[in-house]
Length: 454
Length: 177
Image (cartoon, one colour):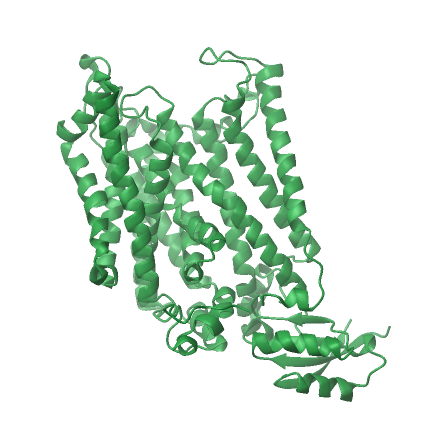
């Protein structure tokens, strides 16, 4: 029995019944693809195709195609990597952490957010793999095998290796969590379908029959997976931040990085979920499931994490001054006033100021304002990584080595490629998989639907 | 037992009615074969008298296995097989081994538990679930009562008990084994 306070805003509007949930969500999967879907797919595949030329050129010629130089050895590639991994934090956070906190509003958005996580992590992994130059070798050099099958092992003291373990674990556990959630919904589609569709969804549903014994085990598996995924989410971006924090580059060598990166990741991940969900909600007519209340709650998370990020920026400056280390002080002074001042101020405007607008209820509950701010936040978060990486590197220890970074068309092409990949995968998911977790939504129809609380 | 099993299916459309119905039906001495639902109904496993799942224990064991494998691997590779001085530190600095150990603990716990779940619930691709009613995955809860296991009662009495406890429909179903 679930008891919900009558003062709570309903999570499902429009007086939906359990059967309506099945109909509303399956309609998209069963119908013909819409014009807007085909248009989106065309755009995504175009980006994918153009970007692929850049990827092929990088693989053929080597990473000399990128704009990297002796001083700035990490630039767009690692910026994009951290950016995508950050975006990939929202899905598992929504489904795992909010499950542990019993936040029922997660149910309408967790499926799409988890799918987004998985695709974002794939996009992220592209960059370190391509940066290896010869990924066909690098793919196994990163594993704990004797180096080139001699006797030298991988270096377990290196945060880059920790990253390999963290990201591959995060990816595979998120994938399992996501798939397990899909199983009962695949069964729903299977039982409505005929012919080849019934065969495919039947295989995907693993012979799910909805027995109480299975549900009981399923519930305890979900809870434990959430318990495991929660520290996992936090560990992934912590370890990504170690890539920088354990080095001795002024601007990177700070202990604030783990919490600061994790907050930033949640911040950008929620923004990306909002960008995608606002479009999906409109195209698939899910307004009764993803309500203004959901949007407003997500905006509150954005404001909280955005404020944490803002405080982290200020703290970095304070600590640079308080440390009394001239190199550290210079690094931060240079961010604000050096040649990359525009990147720094873009970051500050997008990440610190824009989420504060959500204090106003009118903006928080406005769909167009949310959409615009969610995109601004992700632009800001890209600049954050660019500022941390490029601005810290471009002033080397020796002034004679000082340099600037200029991206080539191949840097941009590889980034475009990941966009193409991400949106192609997301659109395929949105068409062929149920975008909202039907089984979970059905379990709250009685307690949280509009007619019950009215 | 014969080749086919005869079921009486009580159809319910409300989870709270279902919960009280399970109590009433079991109270009347009818053995319930299984209850099928489109979504998890909290407390249903307790009402049906199912024991708590031991999957958390499996997860813990797999997790411990992951921890020990990870630590053994790192200590053996960098401490025994090919020791290297890295950054002037010990050959085997424990703090540096924690991230990989943590990740492998989580990885094995998650995969081990999900694998155990799939095996114990017999979930696999290409399996025919033999659905008793296709509305189970839509919006109806089905209480399945196997007549073969309730020899002391006739179908009529069981129908009556189901109707009284709030079933919106009562159907008969024969399933080939």
